[in-house]
Image 1: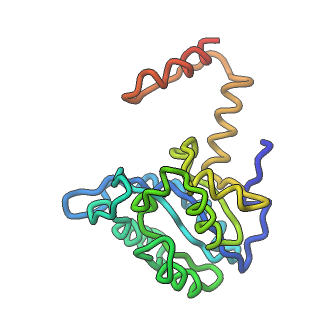
Image 2: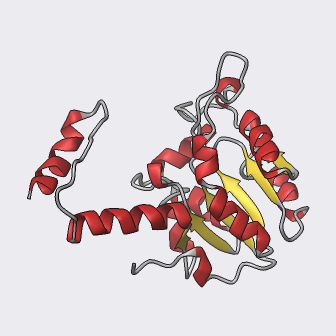
Length: 212
C-alpha cells in the first residue's frame, strides 16, 4: 500500500490529531447502544497511546447541521471509551478555543482527550480553510482512521491534511484499503458482493466496476 500509516510516524511526545468515526447510536437516555465503531478504532488508539502520543480524538455524531445540540453530544461516547480503555478519557466541550487548548495542553504522553462533536461547527462541512488551519494548529501529527467518512471533503478529513507534511492513516483505513485494493485489482473468484444503502444512485458506479 502506497499510503503512510501510523507505524511510519514518530509519535512519542507528539500531539496527534486522530480523526475517528464515533458516529454511534444513542438511546433516549443518551446511552451508547452499539459501540462497534468505537471498538473498530481501538487498535489505532492503543498503538498511539502505547507509543507515547498525546492523543486528540475528533469525531462527528449525527447531523446537527452546524448547531450544538445535547442529543448529538459525544460526552456519552467519551464515557463508553473510558470504560473500554480502562483509563481516563478527558472530554472537551469544544474543539477549538481556550477550553480545548487547555485540555490538550494538560495531556501527558500516553493520554487522550475526546473533543465535542466536530459538526457543531458549520465550518466543518464547508471545508473552511481557516477552520482547517485552526484544527491543524492543535497538533503536530495528523492521522485519519475514520473510514466511513473519509470520502467527505470536510475540514477534519480533508482540509486539515494540507497542513501536515506526513498525514497518515490508522489501522482501520489501512485494513480497508488493502481489502478493497485486492478486490479491485486481483480478486479471488468466485466472490459475492452484498451492497446496501439508501442512495441507490451512488451504488451504480460501484456495481458496474464490480461486474467487470
